[in-house]
Length: 336
Image 1: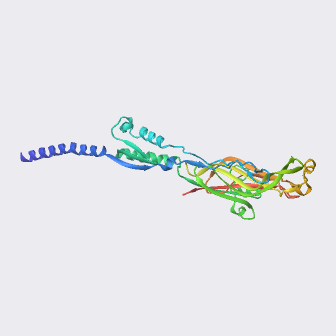
Image 2: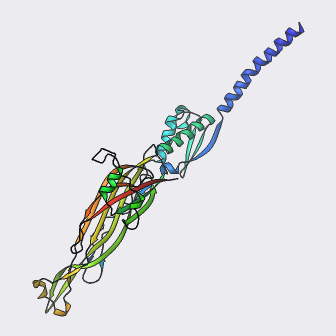
C-alpha cells in the first residue's frame, strides 16, 4: 500500500512539473533580446568613375585655357536602410513587429547599424536573411582586373587553343605567359574595384599645338589669335566587372581606347591671314595625324585566366610603316 502511494505521488509530481518546465521554456523563447546588425555593406553607395568627356582645350587670345568640366563620380546605393527594415519586418515573423501591430519586435536605425529588439528565434532568422542577402549579391566583394595590350601572332596563339579538327574558334583563347613579356606587351594596366563598380585607368601624353588662327583687325593694326588643340598618345580603359553568383567567373563591360598622334608638323599660314599680320609675328599652324583603336564589349570570363578579348590592326604613323595589330588580353581575379 505504501509502495503504491509512493508511485502515485511520484507520478503526480512528474505530471505537475512538466507544465512548469514547458512554461519556463516558452517564457525563455519569448524573451526579447536587443542585438545590433551592421548593414553598411548592403547600403554602401557604389560610386562610379567613368571616363570623363573632356572637350579639347582652347586658348583664348594668348593666355587662359578653357576646359570643359569633368563629370563628377555618381554615387547611388542599390539598397536603402528603409528597404532593409521593410524586408525584415515582412519576412521575419511579420505579426510580431510593433510597426505591424505586434507587441514584441522593434527596429531603430543608428547610422548604418540596425538596433533590433526581437526574440532569440527571430534573431536567428534575421541573421540568416542578412547573410543570405550579402552572399547572393556579392556585396562588398572586390575584383582585380588586369589588362594587357599585346602585339602578338594571333594565328599561332589561336591554333594552340583550337581543338583538333576544328577550323574556327570555339572557345576563349588563353594567352600563354611567353607572349606576355616585354617583347610583346605594349601597354598594361590594372585596377581593383568593388563588384559592379565602373572605374577607369588612363595613361599617355598630351601635346598642345596650334590648330588654327583667327585674324583680329584693328585701327592700323592686325594680328592673329591662335586656337590650341590637343593631341593624345596612350591608352584609356573603362571597365565594369560583375561577379556571377557562382563566384567562378565575372561579366565585364569593357571599353578600350588606344590613340597615337604624330609629331605636330608646321604648315604655311593661309594667304588671307598672312596679309593681316606682321611677318615677324606669324604663328605657325600645325598639323597632327591621329590613329585610334577603340573596342567596346561585354563578355563573361572565368577567373584566374589570361584571355584574349579582341583587337584589330592599328595604322602606323611612321613613314613606310606597316599596320600594327594590337590585341587586348584580360585577367580577372577576386580579391579575398
